[in-house]
Amino acid sequence: MGGVESLFAIILLVVALFVLSSFVRILREYERAVIFRLGRSARAILNPGGQGNGPGLVLLVPLIDRMVKVSLQTVALDVPPQDVITRDNVSIKVSAVIYFRVIDPEKAVVAVQDYLYATSQIAQTTLRSVLGQVELDDLLSARDKINQQLQRIIDEHTEPWGIKVATVEVKQIDLPQDMQRAMAKQAEAERERRAKVINAEGEFQAAARLAEAAEVLGRYPIAVQLRFLQTMREIASERNTTTFFPVPIDLVAPLLRGVQAPKATP
Image (tube, rainbow, N blue to C red):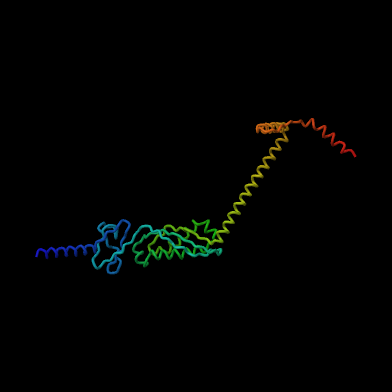
């Protein structure tokens, strides 16, 4: 009889543990519970801490209450590459990532069947719709503005589901090969144009400085001689075999006049 009583006690203990586990739940700090009592949402049910349906210990009525856990953590959802035709008729593939979290667990469970799938679908359709209204240059240069526009539109659609969209980022843009080559040629031409402009500006500044120097030398003839002596010093310091003999212009001028005088006679 002792063995039968022990077996019966073990069975009772197992049944008690099963019943206890069926109406006792423990929620983590980032989890919330949506409890349905006989099919209806029972938001007034409190846990022992008095903080509503989570976190902590939640007590359920066996066979009457059903609990659905909802995570409040931020979800990073990849939006698969979408075929988009931009406003200037360029076919591209664009992928993105969306960051969102649940702010109303009851709406996330009751208002939509699968909020993760629904958010992914609305993100894909919005991505194609918005990027189809912009040109390729704007997409490449004003990505922050487009990200903000995507975030605002998707958040408006998911708000009735208790979903808050924090950020939307366009992650990758795949361009056709011919468009990549055209953009590479455009970038190369732009670099050449800038190089020519910089070279022209350097020539202009050098010419302006030479004109200023000529003007100074014209006003002060002694400066020409000083410059001549400095040039001879620089050449002599290079250890070459060239020898300079400075000849005053005053000695050469009579000879030049004598040569030019017969030519002027008829």
